[in-house]
Each structure stands twice: as structure tokens, then as C-alpha cells.
Length: 336
Image (cartoon, one colour):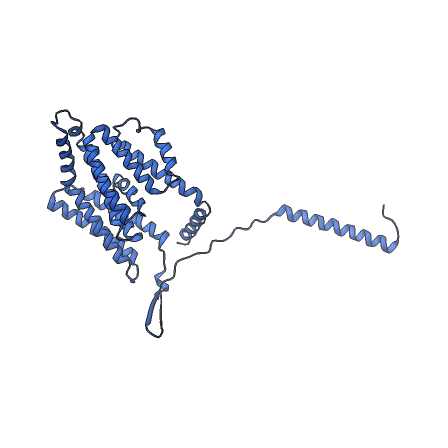
């Protein structure tokens, strides 16, 4: 345990020292992954489905806020959908505008949740998103996670039904628009996941705010179990073709990842909890104080052996010269 705490402190020192380099590098990596995800999922416009274009735009995103990466990713999606079907792109544009209005009004600081949600869905660990949002954010993060969930399922629906949008047998543009709208509004799995994430965030947030011991650990475990139970109930009632084993494995991995994040953000020692009571003119105060787990990192001292030897040699030579001068002054003889 002590070695992990030392590693944690070393990582914090490295980050604080090189923050000006690490943060742009992380922004670049996140933008690069997000844009590549869009290109690999859609890839209908060859001009932007190019690694050099992605690299240049990712470099631009590394110097700007995370919300700029969200806007660029949405533009990539719309360009690909426009190449596939103008009607499909128009419906997606309306959905994005509605979500952007809600997002920038309620939770503009949760850009990482919007970007990481589709990535976690691709990695089959989406449950980690509501767990982390409940632990580190406020209930307003429900808007951000919902934005990410809707984006992922809209892209998945387009890829699954690409033949319907690219077919020339469709009689009119309005029919394509109706297919797109019906596919989004009738996607029961998408709405169930949005509701599940919202409930999970609220439960995790409420539990981790409690003053009980191990509140954060209890919150993430309860949130993961609740998430799995709601999804399994949806599978039984709505027959949504959800992988039960995959959901359980993803929940376990998500709890482990949330535990790692908790170790860096909220690491306390409940065995040394103290209870303090005091009062003023109007109130009695009962305070529970839980100390943080910290460890002092030993500073390395470098011992310069060559310098010590040189100093010893110089002092010895200086002593010899002093003795010679004393002998000369006493005897009056000149030393040759």
C-alpha cells in the first residue's frame, strides 16, 4: 500500500511540474481517438476520412477547450451523414442543436463525459461513465451523459440501416426523414440506457454525499448493481437483446476503474476518524473528521565523492604550505 501511495505522490508531482505539456497532449489524444472513432464508424466522406486531416485537427483541438472537440466531432458526423443522405444529416443536425442547447445551458463543464461516453460504449464498459459522473460531478451531468448516449445510438442506427438511406428505391426525401426520426424515437434501448444512466448518477451522487464510512465505495458498487438490474429488467420486459454476461463483466471492470479514480481523488483512512463537538451562541456542532492517507516521499540526496576528494586534497596541500611558512618564519631559513 505504501508503494502505491508513493507512486500516487510521484504522479502528482510529475503532473504539477509538466502540466503545461500533459494537458495539451491529453487533449490531442482524446480528439484523435474521437475523430478516428467517427471516421471508422461512418467514413462516407473520403476527404475527411484521412489520417493527416485528423492529425491536423487534433493538433488544433489540443490548444483549445474540450468543447471545441465536441463541436468538431459533431461536424465530422454531419459531413459523413450529408455524404450518405442529406435528409439523414438534417435530422441529425436538429438532434445535435437540441442537445447542444441543453448541454451548454446546464452542464458545459462536463465535456469529457460527452467525449468519453461513445468511446466507453465501443470498449463495452459504458457503466463506468455514470459511476464516475456520480462520484465526481453533480446531477447536472445527466445531460452530458445523455448527450453521449444519444450520439452513440444515432450513429449505430445509421450504420445498421445504411442501405435504407443510400437506396434509390425510396420514393421521396420525406420518407427518408421519417425513417430517421422513427429510428431515433422508437429506439427503446437508447431511452432505457439514458434513464438507467440518469438513475445511476443520482443514486451514486446521493450515497457518496452521506457521512457514513466507505460512502464512495458503497456508492459505486450500489450504482453498478442498480445499473445491471435495470438493464436486465429491460431485457426481460422489452426483449432488447442485451448480453447479460457482457453487461456483468463490463460492470465489474467499471467498478475497478472507478476504484482507481477514487484512489487518486478521494483516499482517506476511516480507522483514524475523529468526532469533534463544539458550540457557539446559536448552534451546537458535531463534526466528523476523516484524515487523508498521505505518505512523505523521501528526497534523494546526491553525494559528490569527487568534490570531497578534491577538497580534501586541497586542504591537505594548504596545510603543508602553512607548515612550511611557519618553519620559515621560525628558523629564518628560506625554503628552496
